[in-house]
Length: 141
Image (cartoon, rainbow, N blue to C red; front, side, top):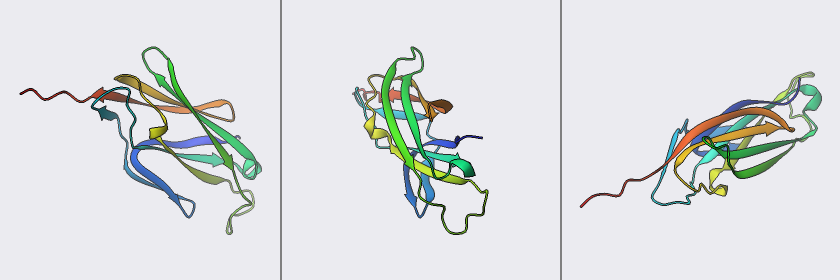
């Protein structure tokens, strides 16, 4: 068994506190901007399971933002996972969940459309989520 992605959530806000993942307004499927290119002040929250034999090793996660229709790569975000020795209370042979939060503001979306966040862990496909980016209609007078 290798490291695996157990959760991937697009949300308004996320943070890690005491090894726990706190997600606020998770499950976003649409982001709206007045103009393009656009950046958004939301987050990608993830939980990565590390099996016992890999829990103390370094791992890498890559998030690739792609335009769904053309598969055009918009951005690549690299995340390093460097785990410390097992926390107190972890039983022998027990894996662990590693919470990860990435601010989506690091990605600039060039135009409206559907986008995929394609996730790889240790150079292997782990999962993806899709969402729409839309332009706010201009009000008519």
